[in-house]
Length: 573
Image (cartoon, rainbow, N blue to C red; front, side, top):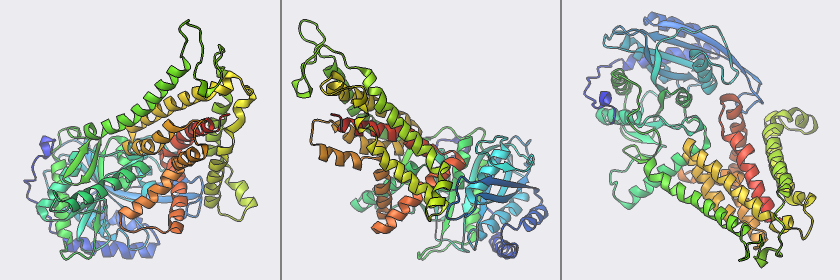
């Protein structure tokens, strides 16, 4: 633990309202069933009775296209939250405990425990920070609406009611998911929007209190083995590490905590698991763990900043820091730089007399004519025009597609996306011939200049991406760098074309889906994997339009055009 204020778990947790938490959960479930959704009136009444300052927020959001869970364009909902004002300080800082109101029996116990903790916290006098107890509707949509209104910003065009009741600046947040009366373990989710991660001290705090109270804790659903120095333990750690890389690379938050990270608020999601394990833990034990975490966060004198923000986790007790994994990525980028330098030297090769002469007989006749860069404009423009079409047309053209084909809006968007992606491979093959005829220097040497441009373009993209989302940058580098370095129109074209197709981001996504199912020990059949692939495409578009995830525009406007440039190099005559 790097933060001095949280360096010890020596607090005496006294939470004993486990039975009351279950009673509140049953009442919440009954009122939710009666109301057919969020029981707003009951929640407000209950929070008022606990002595909280209660507020509600109504919001609405228009979807770019209906997804499978919300078969409508307009989503309306209500968030209810109560503020426990700190008795020992002004309202300058705050902590958040949140949970979602989900359909069916999901998360009823989380709401009951949240209200029981509010009741217990209300009777304590040591709080130096306000505590916000939030129950939001529609998962990420409700959380996004609340965070934007709380910070008085409008990033995603969500519409909400007037000004909210505010506490202090939020220092940390914990999102709770709990759907059973007892738990066998707690799984912690750390990946946020665009692969952001919380400060490692918050994760260490959770792990420390789980160990103190005897709770089993997992990450990525994997429990650390006790024989950590054995071969099976290393295999388990590798599985956990790969699952985190895939989850972070997706850019999708693995819980409602993921949206807090955008506002520089350290947050995690805790999921209660009730499995076949023998040892069961009741609500009192879970409540004591959360009480201990909030009491230590209450001691913070400043924002969490001492520990790491960039890391990979093979288990909850060990991590890989940025200083260890970044050199591996650097060596991959070095391949692109060295290959580009080799092409640059070939293009600038001169004879002893000093005349600009290209003497490599394998690639064309010697001549004093410089490569006409104008011949490279058409393929570059066409490749980026294909990227623009891939980004804009699927959503804009959904109404046309549904009028002419028997598909839903979501299916039309995904199928249009795939059609444009595949069609783009046929566009740039002969565009260079518009300005460069057969036998000219542009035709003979132009591919080298184009590949030099593509390699530098790819290296710049991957380097910038690795600083924002290392896992995504690393996966793209592992797949694209070997294919980019080997691509040339002079080699075995069929083999190189196959390698380049396998290196495309779409194939990387499909293979990642199958790998993820293998790692969670639930292998997917080809049909199921394809359906998950189509669902991932639709969810990726929604995540960008609703929450501002950058994966969709990055792949469509950056990586895909760069890949098309390499495809054009391969088929250059």
